Length: 359
Image (cartoon, rainbow, N blue to C red; front, top):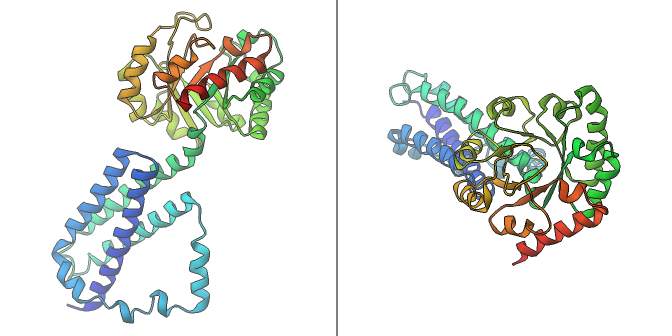
């Protein structure tokens, strides 16, 4: 057998394994995403098993010392190019290593069609792996791009309910909320037309962007897209999560309201970046709200690793309880919007959250 194809296969298998291992470690250690990490691990192990029969032949043909493409033999301008490539952010690292693995799979796939190689390697197996990796790359990149946004869901989440505001200036209220220390603002209005909501949402988005806090739209996917909101929040009766995830840009977060453990588990499996559990306490802000209590909040916390937002009836007297029960964030309406000094009220709520988290 000609040794050239074997040397090419050996080099590409090494690139493939290295690239997949890096992606697996990102999923495991940075994202703490067990299913994604496991899928990458299985893919890596399956491909190693597929090429196991060639192991000794490949190793015997390896000649790294005389490889004209090795770092020691590269011209200086190519070495500089490699150095510039190293100056990437994490999404860039993911893309580079995924492409490296995908290209290696394509090379091996094509060489596996050669008559002398085909009896030992199945080209269809490498084609299938390449398409699997395309999907895993997208999932991994989207999770990384949303990671910074998800990290902001660790404090006070204020819902600007326009019915509760009853005509008050949303922008002025939002400024007070931001000054008080809230990390997230959600715009909610189930009665006003979207045409009227659009300019309001755009002004709020601009304000939140300048203040480096998240701006979320409740329910309306088209409105979230129109103003380039940071994310969308949906309920159990809205569009299905998989549909929303396919429609939203991959760097946008999606939150989902739940009242049961099973709903929380499903929301996590379908791609929710955070879960809003409630109503924790009785509330007048939402008619017919199901009260689930602190015990159910704890059960949801134990059942899913998703970022958890507690919502419903939360105020300065009980906000510490929901954080102590496992919520990463607490969402409020009346406890902020209906207070005489909104900035002060928000600041007090934020202080209560931080006090519990410091313990």
